[in-house]
Structure formats: C-alpha cells, structure tokens
Amino acid sequence: MTIQEAQQTVDRWINTVGIRYYNELTNTAILMEEVGEVARLMARLYGEQSFKKTEDAAGAKAQLGDEMADVLFVLICLANQTGIDLTEAMKKNLDKKTKRDAERHAGNEKLRNEGLKE
Image (cartoon, rainbow, N blue to C red; front, side, top):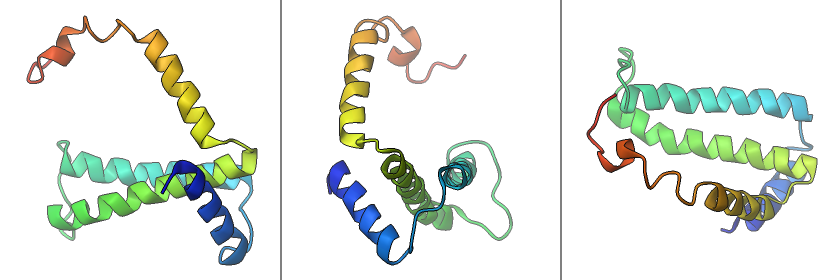
C-alpha cells in the first residue's frame, strides 16, 4: 500500500465506518496518546523499564506493531483533515534532510561505534 493509498483508504473508512473525522485538536490528543502507548512498549522491550506482572515480552512485541499502526492511522487522519499530501511532504522532507545532512552524520563517531556508550 502506498502512502497515497493509505490516505484514501483511511478517508473511506472514516466516512463510512467512523461516520466522520474527530476535530483536529481531538485527533492531535489521540495521536499523543497512541505515541505514548508505543513509548511504553519500547521502554519495556528495548529500554530498562520492567514489565508489569500482567505483561510479558511476547505479548508486548505482538502489541507493538498494532500500536505503531494506530499512530500511523491517526497521523493519516490529521493529514487528510489538514489537506496534507503525505507522499509529497515525505519527498520534500527527505530532500531537506539529504541536503542538510549530506556530511553531518559521516563525521559522527557515535554512529560508527555502535557499542559506544556516552
């Protein structure tokens, strides 16, 4: 599925199953909530946070993809609501990063030494 197809698919879903879009501010709050859920799982799976007694790594790993998809879904909703073509926005963003960072990361010793701790 392309980004454009995802935007169209989400729009169709919202206008049929979802009835209508939540307003932009509500969707922004929902996006923050979903990002928080991804952060919680990342802290437990890849960080130092302990799992709760009712959680385990296998369950958290299975949840992670679903939570990331929730983030993407709400981000696409916001793009649709605000008239942003995410394909074009992504192309422009990558072009900006390529120009800005053409030499920036090549000299970063921390990126060369994967195991190096600060």
